[in-house]
Length: 151
Image 1 (cartoon, rainbow, N blue to C red):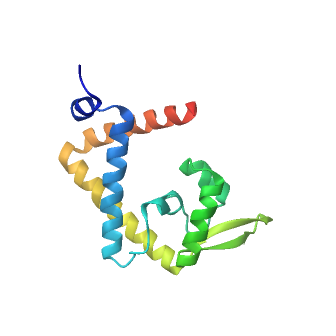
Image 2: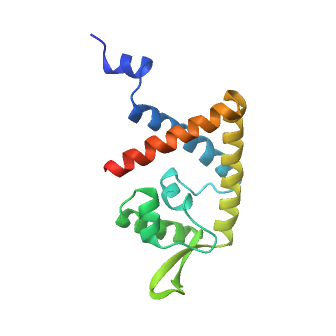
């Protein structure tokens, strides 16, 4: 009989594989960000930072995009606001709503994170070739969106 540990070593399921990829990318991203002066960020902050736009975004959109509950997003926004990465501003399209907007420090972090992620992606594209990497991303996007539609 094959144990779960053996199966995960030789034929990992989708959850194990996606978790390994996520955690490995997060480790590299946040270690590099820390080395560049953003050492107060934690991987959990990625649920907000990865979806933040320069012009701001509503918390409900952050929740939808990241797949996190609105309460979790609210807590993360509170933390990032205290750290000086974001601020809440009235939404000019609806004064009752708030936009989560990056501060100067938030914009600097966004630029750094974009450059780090571009380098990670380039490295993998070089390993498997441009066509292989495009196909990998196409299939991964398809599987991800199909799975999100089921939950």
